[in-house]
Length: 134
Image (cartoon, rainbow, N blue to C red; front, side):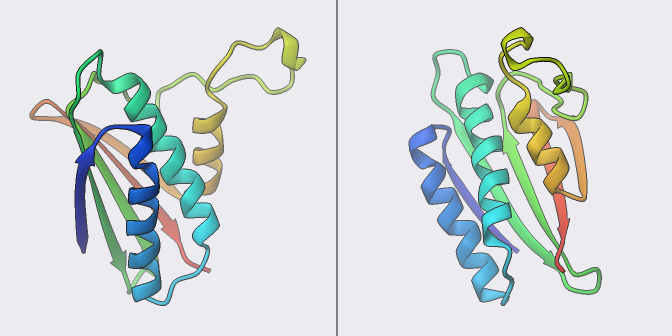
């Protein structure tokens, strides 16, 4: 397990992506592009919406469950409470010009990962995602 804490800013997304990619490489795991998409979407949402005009941290924890052959990424932040699992999924069947803005990134994340769990504990949002390695 490895952990990285950094300031919640979109400018730090490459730092987090590189951190996870290094972890995956150290564990001989491919599928980096799918993890990049998930990391970028989750971190951009936290950076843009979790804090109102304040600067705070995000902690990203990477783990590899070898017996289940799955990667576990946990994102922790102390921003506004937000459960992405309960977030409204956009209706992609209606014409694009009639859709509300937002929600597509979380839809993409939900379609990439195998499991997503959310908890609010001790003033922190804790989002845990799991992805089986093929």
